[in-house]
Image 1 (cartoon, chains in turn brown, purple):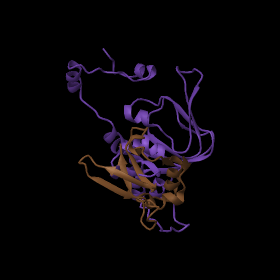
Image 2 (cartoon, chains in turn orange, purple):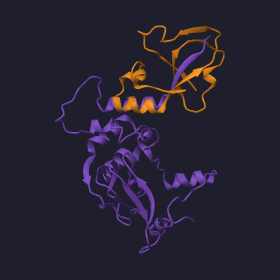
Image 3 (cartoon, one colour):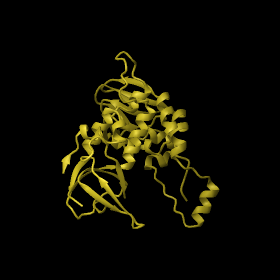
Image 4 (cartoon, chains in turn green, orange):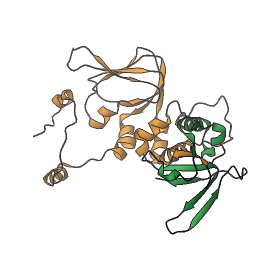
Length: 89
Length: 203
């Protein structure tokens, strides 16, 4: 785990729309996590509240309940496109 | 599919922050004149006064956005000095306070004339004075500034209109009786002192 930098948060939507003070607060409250291949990041939510999950690096496949698969490319691969959040409970 | 790096953020907290910035009229890249007076909107995105924890866990969380905006329009900014007593135990409730800057101490005596015990220390972002306004009882503690600072205060009627109504669910005596008959339990959460000075008795 490593602290999130405000420069990183300012590349993420809709966080980038926040005032500088709020971005600073968020930066102090969140960390960048590394998840090894094969682990499910949606099963790692130790808090009960709904979370927004930004994929920053690497490739993640999402299997939907209707058996369709989505494939997400990380923002690191497409740096011009801001990363987008996925909700997890 | 590969090792990944992720960033997780509490969705509710982000929603609240976005709402507050929006209500405050914050626009990315817009610069304000240094000479401009500090207004209600600026208070709202002042993270020193209304930090993430107070927005997420405090009374503002449950308020409709329109009420939050109106609340800050009606608040009055009051400079205060170290040693100044802001509210005194036993007085009638008149204002609800938020600390913009400075620190205060809350003390309480269990009986008239008894020594006061310090029960809490408050700093920027803390709020006080709501209990007497909600309950209609007298102040149950004394709050004194420990440092110079600035308070934001809201008058009793504005508090009742903007904060109490959306946050406190009231029911009448008949409805309360019906609920008790169906198994509801009535809890008396008043302090012994408040209970003694009130005409309302539990039987």
